[in-house]
Length: 101
Image (cartoon, helix red, strand yellow):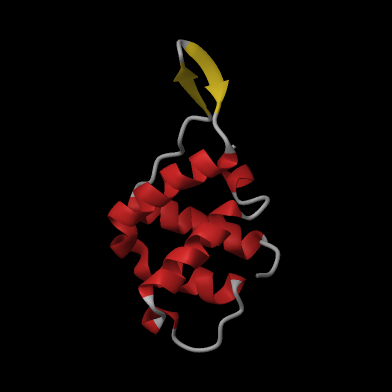
């Protein structure tokens, strides 16, 4: 997986716009105290939102995966588990969640 660049951020923006994904809150309440969520927790919230509306930005998501993971060929034929794993890896990539701040 290569480093994220400006073109990737433009695709991510387009995906967010098309799917209507909301930027999750960085904090949560635990035992009545406000604490910061981990990057993993924030990533999982985004994954859940994407999972519900992924069909709305199919072309852009495939384009992003193909570019970031430098995949030759048709990503739309990739096995579901591999696609899911790549999306998780992308969301966990340093710098990805910075786009949402």
